[in-house]
Amino acid sequence: MMKTAVERASRPLKFWILGNFLSPAFRHAVNSGALATAVGAQVAIVQYDWPSHLREQTEKQRLIWGYKILFLDVLFPQSLRKIIFVEELIAS
Image (cartoon, rainbow, N blue to C red):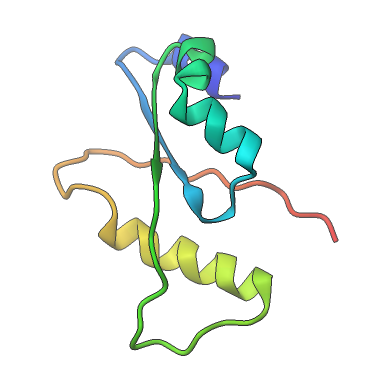
C-alpha cells in the first residue's frame, strides 16, 4: 500500500508510523532503513506517550482510538498541507 502511494504521488511522500504498537521486527525494518528503501520514501517512527492528565485506558481498542484522536493534533507540524491517516483493520 505504501509503495503504491509513492508510485502514484506527484510529490515526495513521508510516512510517519505510530510506534506504540509496532512489533520488534517492523520497528527494526523502519530503523534500519529497509522499509524506506523498499517503498522509495522517507519513513519515520513517532512515539506519543499517553497524557498524564487523562485517565489511563486498559482496553487496547480504546487506547488505540484515543491515540488516533490525540496524535493527529500534536505530532505533526502545523505547516503540513495534508495528512492521510490509514489504520490497520483489527479483527478480533
